[in-house]
Length: 204
Ligand code: TYD
Image (cartoon, rainbow, N blue to C red):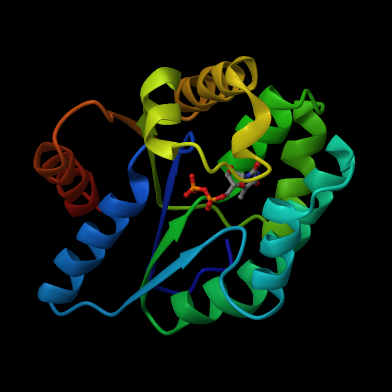
């Protein structure tokens, strides 16, 4: 692992699972304790990443599943090299909204791209850097789609069958890597979920 210091926490879950609210609350918690943090997201971050995000979420022509995977992975490589690694080197706590497990759940389990291929490409994109902790916010598809609302982006329009596979994928990832990956039931209140998130983060 190339990480010098700092802490790397990723947040995962289906669209509308409430993770963005929880990341912001955890960020405030760390700041109140005097830690330096970096709040970032995939696809995106800044610069080139935000341009890739625009294509991935809003391009309205045909996008093959392979192409979609490579675009998410290209965004990840840029994000890791230019944003995440430098922040970890400065000793920051990096809180990242989606990372490698999104590609496994969405493009692997959801779109049906071979999982070994995705795992290999994820390793290439991250140079093997892994999060210290990943929190998956688990939610049933009906509630998540209600939260997303009517205005859906390209990914959110993929349909219930797709999102059931994504949810199953996330739970499989958690089974396979129980030390790194923890699951929180997103049906609880914002305050209770925040308490659970803080407990997990404090353990680090
Ligand atoms: P975003 O608006 O950030 O969704 P959310 O607020 O739910 O995190 O959009 C990111 C979308 O991209 C989301 O639908 C998940 C999808 N995605 C993938 O399919 N693969 C990936 O590797 C990543 C990072 C995201």
